[in-house]
Image (cartoon, rainbow, N blue to C red):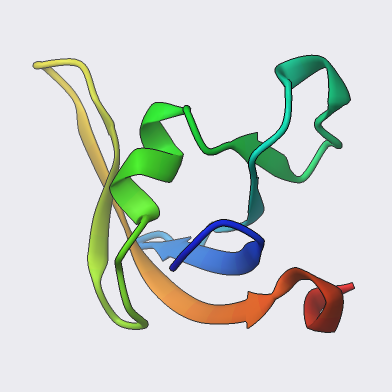
Length: 77
């Protein structure tokens, strides 16, 4: 996973989330885009399909999702 790529995450309950990692200011991000500076993007960068990603961890609750697919953002559109 790298900047300019889209991905799909699926958790154990089957909940699906899709994101595009972008390197632009937060106020210019679209609904499905996350900043390269975000904690989630930092966890996704360098990952591959089928990797398990910790999407949330506050010390009490830990949420994980599997990286289902990765595509270039223009293929995803």
